[in-house]
Image (cartoon, rainbow, N blue to C red; front, side, top):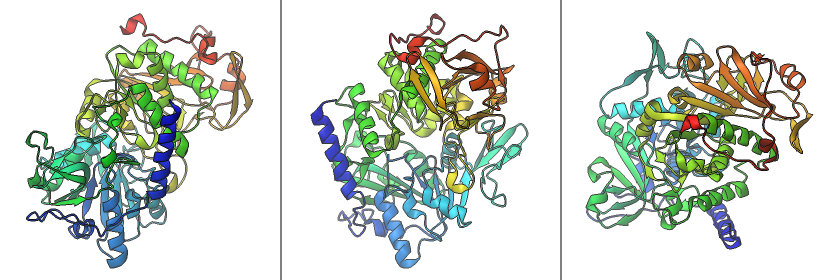
Length: 569
């Protein structure tokens, strides 16, 4: 990346950092003859005590900053609106770090219940939950998307096998009420399936680039579409209200209307409305749209640079690169050209980088849970968007794609066990340490192959020495005999005939009928001392007793090449 580009991005970050809490909730853009145009505080008055407020977005994409600030300020001043249920499919908090997220509503008495698939970013709400002042309900992201869509058709529940064998299954874990066993159960067992329900949406809120003076909404220029249409239709079907937050007012474009004026009750114009975190719609970045003006490689490099400067994306080590190369080789040996691929956050992003640099990403279609298809999934605070996407579809449509056509999912791990079960939803005790599954349960249910990528011991000191890995200082392994919570059921995966791999610091494991079988070992790793004796996870060796050693090019990177195997052609 050019020095001038880096300097421009540093200026962009600095400007955003200095102004990220700036807002004017008293500002009101009016259109004569159209009462739907109003200020953010006027729009808040449409929200009643006890309403179920559903929003569209993911991470910093489609953030409704001005509305969150206005709701909080009105509550602080008047005590209204109270006891709101907030509902969103994915993480729309900011981990307590960035103002203007849904965490602004994490006030006692204001937010009474949070219904979402991913809790980790909502630190304000999780603190309230830890004090017993807020109810948290967890529903897998895809299922929640389908439930919101179903409300638009007048339906209030759905049956699915998704989640069986995981913590969301009341026979295995706490179900939907992850912290309070006395709270309403939104997931129940019905025969050999699970019955899911969600509260009825009475207020829908979303952000968009523009509206015309009649009140029609335009989404062109958004980084995602997410649940814009679903929350709107659900609120309409439930006789609720729809609030749109837009950046500007434009001339009517009949062929480009996305949400017609008849479906919108309030339009709040905010010149600082964002395309994605730090990026205003008035300075839209085409690289996050289907009309990118930069090559995909440069686009993803810019996004990574911003995350690294802000300290959002971890700075990767040589050992991380080794794990990513092992995972990338496993992908190439088992995936097929032309398939659909979902890439998770963390180390999977490094696998994605390896695939892109080798040219393999151009032979498959990557996508995000928000409905962004093609390009390279964006990292960090841009998660949910993509660099140079090919098209955008609603979340419900992408989850249908996941269930019908997903070939490979590359995902991270908090911990795994002897039966191939994986926990990604719980880091520790108490609500503040809860993560939630996001779309993980849906994705692993739909994928034909799941490739997990993880350090063997996350806090250990491991070094690359020549063409070997050396464990300098040991720590507790991620792989153990039992888990704190099951987010992925290894046994259900085996029953479904899935391929399941684990690329780690010490080697490659495959989940088989025999158990967690060590398929390859890293050079420098002692199988007995560094694997069998160190971890409580029961490890199975190949029936031959011989474990092949990982190729030295995976460790050193020298001469490393990637290509699909003949079997994947």
